Length: 112
Length: 106
Image 1: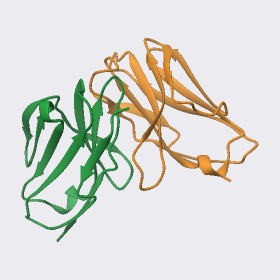
Image 2: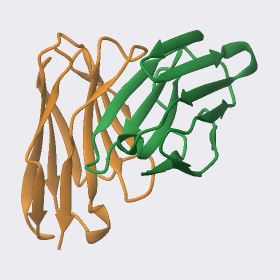
Image 3: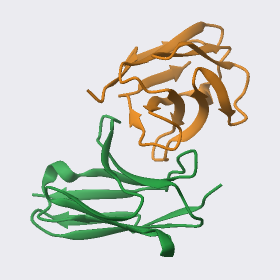
Image 4: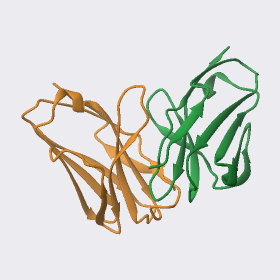
């Protein structure tokens, strides 16, 4: 099973709201990732967790806060977002950071 | 980070045609992935190919790591092949190219 699940599929939020995106995998992978993708652009890496520890933060603003409660779950907490943060947020996982990555279907986020 | 160039940026094909997509990258890498992104945004794994040639149905890929390029071949294209194809070399993290947008017309 090479499935990564993400919830919700769509999210609309105001600039003062707090919301969370959730990602789950049951492949026993030890690396998990958050990417952001704007329309007609490639995915951009935001965060990497390796063995449940944050190993890469690509200078992401603090209004995005990742959390890895266990090896199967990855959350992205959102607070005080801006309209320009509207994008497709993709989660991925891999056995190890240098191995093949598998992506979830994404969450389409709209910030009003 | 690794610089990735994909060509061509756009490709329009008649159903049944063959095509080649190219990916050049600037440095040595641990591995390389090819993805197809469908209109709903799902990134579908096509190949995990650090070197050599692999085939999967009508698709095949070749990576020549020493010369820092990879090729994706689509044969007998179908309308369902439409979408964006991304190449992503990995040197501990994926570096995506800008993609090739493929449109297959019936």
